[in-house]
Image 1 (cartoon, helix red, strand yellow):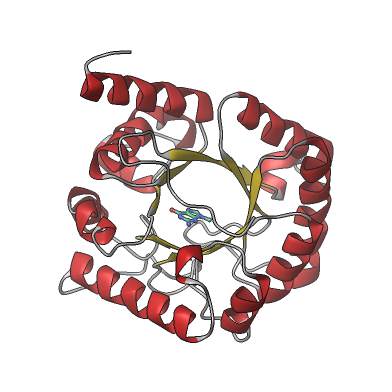
Image 2 (spheres, rainbow, N blue to C red):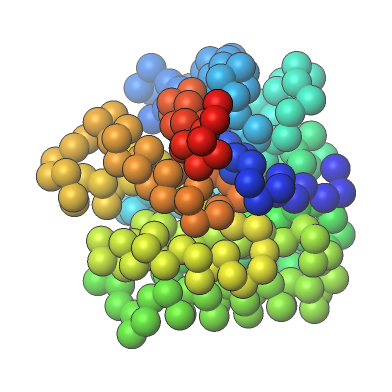
Length: 276
Ligand code: 9MG
């Protein structure tokens, strides 16, 4: 799959379904991960209209502990292989570790979703070698500490500068311009005000000229607005954010609730067109 580019501007953004293969998502509370349940969830998201499944074995939530490479591989590779056997749909690997990205692509993944924007040693060279689409995301700090008082003078300008620089560096290392996607990294080292500014001014990121992935699904900023809404009570906020991304021209939204997001995006597009 050499290039994966957005559909025409008037069409719906692609929908990327989140598949976290982590013990808190697919275990009975112990360390054992139910791989079959994870694969079934991925297939269900595809039946519900997802264009891409994003498979991750290390949580990137604020405060999350790092996971060793071997454990991450143990979690994601069997799931990728099984989904690949059962579906021709696009699969994305959510990892910042080059070792995991390589094994995932060998196992059948088509896209590299890198929350560290190819900053790990060897990542740039590997992205050029693999030749798959790569998502470069902005994050200030690392998941463990990124929410410890993040500061910016101009969050939108700084995120745009960072993404432009990472895209330039990637191309300098041999990554094809048509393989590059950008992502402002909602919730990654950002306060509520930072997240809101990035959502309001998302068109600034889109104007950089690359397809943009946008992910706000179930994130904590929703609970800062609708006080105390726990993770499973954030569908309304997630849809509102996805609608904003669709309106601004994002090429893909990363979501947990695929069925409802597809429906909301279809209604938004129908309203825009004035016909079903
Ligand atoms: C892994 N992950 C969690 N949130 C994300 C987001 O908003 N964008 C991307 N690219 N990856 C994310």
